[in-house]
Length: 374
Ligand code: MG
Image 1 (cartoon, rainbow, N blue to C red):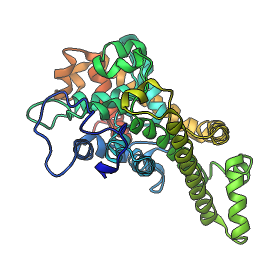
Image 2: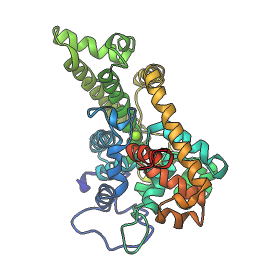
Image 3: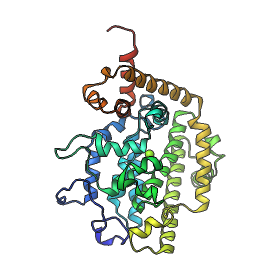
Image 4: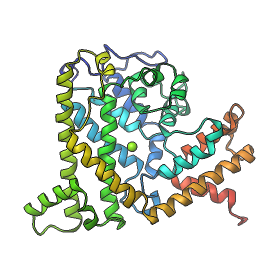
């Protein structure tokens, strides 16, 4: 694989390395080592019990952050391979991209951000970086996972200029308004392909969406019609799956084709050329517009469905109750977070809450607020 890569792919010759020097890995590349460290981390295992859209206990078949991350990795690898980039780096970034997510999906993130407003805010991208840089404590020589610059840069998808100034080399590109390497750009769009499609699937499975509604969305309608032409009697889950798998295929194929064309037009010779150029990993205009339509549909019909809103409202209450309780009495925090709280109480509380799984947050809330003495 290494020899087939294009000159602007990430690799040993142009890596900016790790924060702490370590001997080179044996039998695997530096990015494979990053991926392996991510998979072995505690934060990665917790993704299994964190909400994507549906709270973890609502059903066994819905996506969680873990299965979402695996789908993103699969899509990302396909595109990276097609474009002869570094598949392992894309995989490492995709597997780590949601490590900093709070319990209860975006509702949890919004609530924690609101609580943290006076203390520097809370942002899940930045928190993912914090998990791999600081919070994981597994190695003798350093805190965090000591990942390569390229993986860390890919994890930090966006951040405010203010935060960028405090991040040193990793924040540089936001200040210079540059792009990250192509492996990171792929991870970004692989995320979008994965969630748009699995949210359709989960939305239908949950009964919050129906096929009739979805047929108003161009990209779904087009693929559904093709399925029905080929299999006139196909019904139910099989029809949904046959339609969604074709959509994913269309999106990946379009992304491959359009990105290859924009790379060809630029004819980059190095990663530096990629960084200075506009984003090269992209969809064709038609697919981009269709994706935007689908996103709008999911926003108004799924993410703002009253049943999802009820869950989100409860989630926000749980998060802000927990935050307030710990702010009032930091002595309620587990010992390792009390030690952190001495330096920065709100940040230590945010780290503790962000690390919780959905069910842990529910149990912790019950422990602190239930008036049953048992
Ligand atoms: Mg994601």
